[in-house]
Length: 217
Image (cartoon, rainbow, N blue to C red; front, side):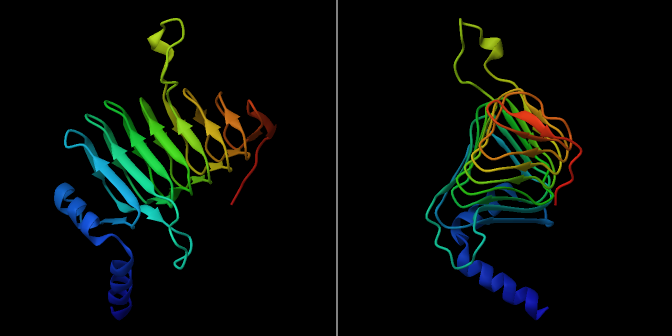
């Protein structure tokens, strides 16, 4: 019991208590939810949006090391009529940002998935991230080109689905209309423009399969 109280006190010293409290009051999260916002965070959630955390822990601007200064800002921005659903544990580490555009939907399955330092997730259509996904530094995930070519608006955006237990290396770019299969690995610096098979390793620009039937831990 004492250990739990000590942990809560130590946490309260570190987090942005005012912003965290305001979010708790506004969204009335379930009792099984932990929601923490660390300093140097930008939080902008539209009143016309759906913002749900169903279970587990959701953290904004976390750090791997307690004594490391947060040199970068994390941003969580949910626009009008957008939908954000977090079904389990998910963390944004320092500098990582999420944007959900009007009428778009982002689903985070949780299970200790995270978006690491300076990575960005921009959702204009539909993005889903599975359980146990490790998304490294400087990764860009975006499901829209934001511009049409020859006036064809139908091809501007397409859903991105990242299945469970996917490892995405540093400086990766994941573009619209891609499904990354369960247990896959995306090598550092890759640009993913096509589907990735489960348990495969892809690398390069554009990313191509270099190994199959891998198991990573």
